Length: 387
Image (cartoon, rainbow, N blue to C red):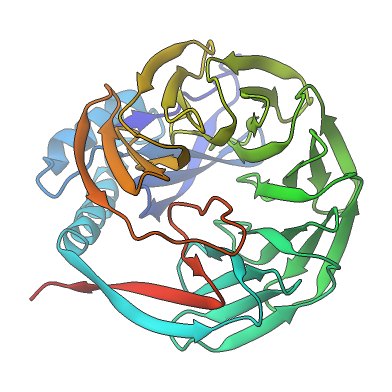
């Protein structure tokens, strides 16, 4: 269990809890509280929660660490934790099966992304469009047209899921409405292809990474450029915000990863250690670790507070194409061109591995770990409970 510390200020401002919200993934409880007349939110992360966790003991621990959770709220917190445990039990014995095959585009797909609830998803394509789909029915909801070249990078503004960003080889990024398919803004400023993008968790900014060696931050409300992040000497092909939205990470073909302050655009430090192009870079959920994957066949784990390498994960015989944490930050998955997928703990121990299908597009571009773009088809994989 992890709680964020409460800023007490001078001690004169009182804090009043207004409500408790359940967060299923990753498991946690969101607190809405009032301080100084302003409504704020914070989270209690329950990343180690299991179906066998002692709820009473956990609530006592939460009350000791979080002053907003008083004795009068204990029964409500217990109920929320029990609901989280019920949800964990539902997902303990899933099997997966092929649900639908959609003939999505007239040219190969580049990427696929789901909204937070999984109710709809989007596909990007070499046909210069992005399509919005209803997951359950497979119905096409919108075709987002306007780019003049390949739509390569796509994303929802999760957890809200009401906006879509598309990045294109035409050097622009567009912001769209999920409900209507309307284009809100076209972000212009890059001088080469946009190949990665990400919303911040607050959905106030979208970041774009480009083959022009820069990343840019854009204001979603007014469509203006906020910062240009310069310092890489080669293409930026991976970027992401941490869960607080305060920092952003960029991975480059110059073999380095840079960490930046999102509110100032200042570079905090550069991670140097890989000896080939970076393929992925991301924070774990609690922002304490950074994971980087590289074409040098390794992943590296870094301390996010000081930028020092704490582990190098070896074992693949070919380029690392993608990597990710599980929501607890204790396990790491790596996908490689050697056809193996490794599941590793934070100490570098390979827990197990399985063979992956070889998924390739026409230009052999790296394919994200959790996406399924193959030729012109989108494969939808859905879980079912074991009987």
